[in-house]
Image 1: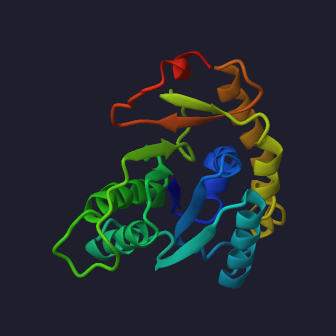
Image 2 (image 1 turned 120 degrees about the vertical axis):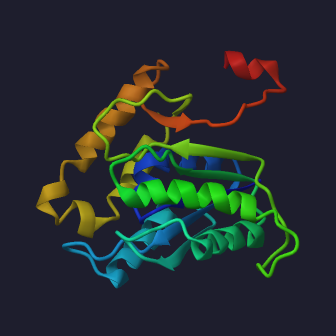
Image 3 (image 1 turned 90 degrees about the vertical axis):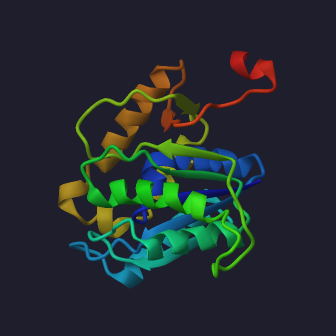
Length: 227
C-alpha cells in the first residue's frame, strides 16, 4: 500500500495528519509526503532552513520519502502544469491512497491544493499523454483538517491518535523557524493539543484527527464497525 499525503506547505501535513501518518507507518504502509511549495518566504525562515526542518520532521514521522515541488507559496493556483506535476508523482510512486487538505479554508493555498489534488488524481489515470510513469488511479482520497477558518468542523471519520500524539508533536517541533522563534505562533502547540483533544473526545479517545470524505466508503469486514 502506497499512500501520498499532499500539503500546500511544509508543516501542514504534520499539523493536520501527523498522528495518522505515524499510525500508517507503524502499520507497515509506504507513506510519502508531497509539499507543493517550500513554504517560503516567512518572517524567520529561509528555503534552506525549511528544507532542513521538513526533512527532519519526515524522519521523525518515519515516512518513506518527502518531495517538494517548485510551486509558489502564497500564489498557488490550480493550473494544468501543477496538476501534471502532482499526477506524475502519483504515477511514479504507484500511489493507492491520497490524503490532502479538506479545502474549506481561509488560506488560498490550502484551497488550491485541494483542487489541484482532485484534478491530479484524475489526470494520473490518463493513457494517451506525455506524462511520466504508468497510468494510476488511487482508489481512495481522504481530506484532513489544517484550516485557518474559525469554525468547528464536523468530520466523517476521526482517527484515534492517542498513542501517536507525542510523536506528532515531536515532528511539529522540528519547524523551529515557524513555531519556536516566531513569537506570533508559539501558541500553535496549545492549539494543536486542544484541537486533537476535542476530536478525540468525540470518540472516547484522548486525541483524535479529523478526516473528511467525498465518496462512499466501502466496508467488507463488518467487524470494522464495532472496533
